[in-house]
Image (cartoon, rainbow, N blue to C red; front, side, top):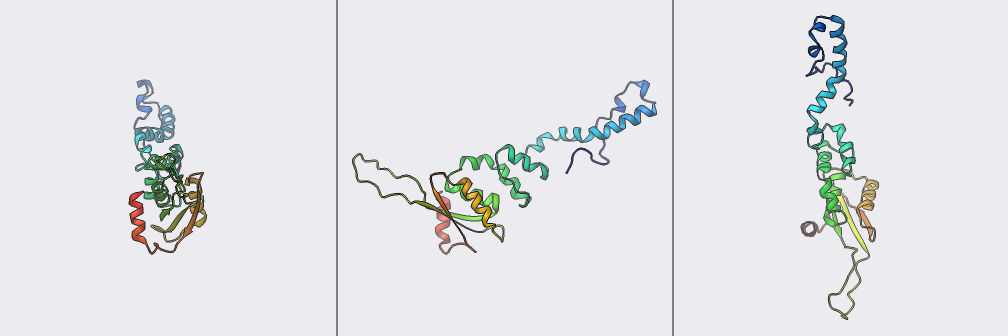
Length: 195
């Protein structure tokens, strides 16, 4: 969509009405300024509604990609509009959660529309007791299980790319694409609440 020319959009501030009285009856001056009004009307309409452009829940759909880039969020025009708006609106929150289980699950849900479960933490282990026994080693990898959520199909390449982007650098993240929720779905729900 282009905001450069909107056919039939009237100007709220016609230039011809603001000219000195000498030009009020001049046909050429009125037609000339009417042409300028056609060019400036979208600019005035945009400025009058500027706050709406910066609110992802109100912004025009073609403006969402720019807003997403502005806040470092992900936007995919192929996704439903309401999910795109929610992803942009929650971009800052997702940045705060980046590198956590909850952040990965929420990003997969918002950006790709899939449900996910993350097991393993890939973190470091330590002992609070000086000179105590060495703790068992941490799990070497994180398992991300993904299944259809709001979408019926899963694009495995996009899932892998997003997980690679959001998984902490020091961890190895494995991805499993499932056809439906895992058999231990209740355990998944519990882990989602703990994350």
